[in-house]
Length: 168
Image 1 (cartoon, one colour):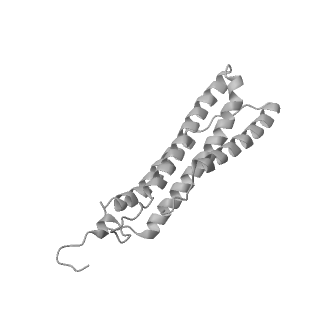
Image 2 (cartoon, one colour):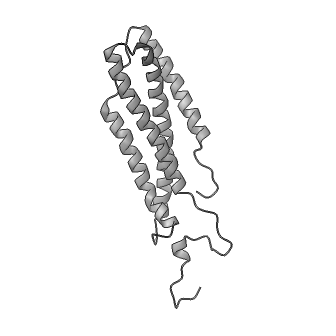
Image 3 (cartoon, rainbow, N blue to C red):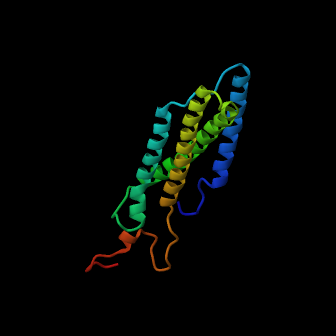
């Protein structure tokens, strides 16, 4: 990504707020019908954490290439890493809002043991979703192409090094 456009905090905040509002509406209606907020399965928390790791690991080769530590990287792979990082940040923001809405509905009933257990799971899900947002933004930053130096040809630092004895 060269021009700085990408998923920004304001986009993620908007997505998070929209999903928090939708979650609040859904769970308020559910509560008024006599239901309780269900606990989030631990597998959901684990999947959010695995997604964060996958997002960072997909962007790592691009980071190595841009820092000159890797000779080449497939440009399609780099574009996919950028897309995955942005999708991860947006997904994390949506999950953050959804689980935060559930947590806000559960707070008034924390005196109930079953709600307290569900709230513990919700806190873990909110934290895992926040980690996915941070991982997505970090991976997006790893895919950012630095501005060209006046003497460079726009290639990576590794590609700019000319082996001895070759003409430029």
